[in-house]
Length: 227
Image (cartoon, rainbow, N blue to C red):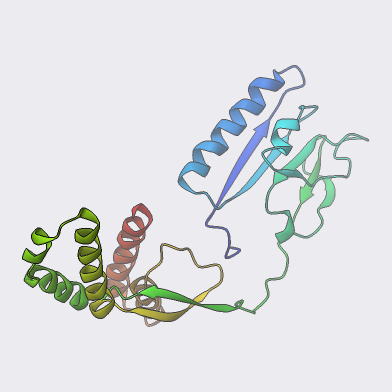
């Protein structure tokens, strides 16, 4: 899986020569939209026997039709529409399989580099539970009575925000951390740590421990995405 792709959706299509072009493309795009709403970084592979389907809408999705060689006689009937074309080698058209009158089309993924990419430094606010608890206690202990003796709302607002901001920066300071350049913005520091624990349990054949961490990773992923 390319790191930038969260999921891959594969659609198989047969479009008879006499079928309604608009109905087919509308159905395909509606299906893709349904998946993309839940998985914005989805990879798409739409393939099959398209015959003479008018594909302007599909190519504007945008998907790229990558099959250029004839698959039946001199016609290109079997096609692949995808947004993952950069991850695959040039297709190969082979002889037909069994009694099929259509040639077989094969696409193989490119060799994946062992380079894990580059890390970047980002500034994030500390989210440690102990700091949040102490922050809550500190705010509760603040004597807010001077606010009620201010003459204007602007003065009250300035004192309020100044006090809260000072406490936030004290108990939850900003930190510089290293993240992978393709890392999603919703990931916090605890999430990759859980993944490391899960992978270690899997590698060392600790089945029960692996399942426990797997479930925690899945629950945290859903929670962080929603937030």
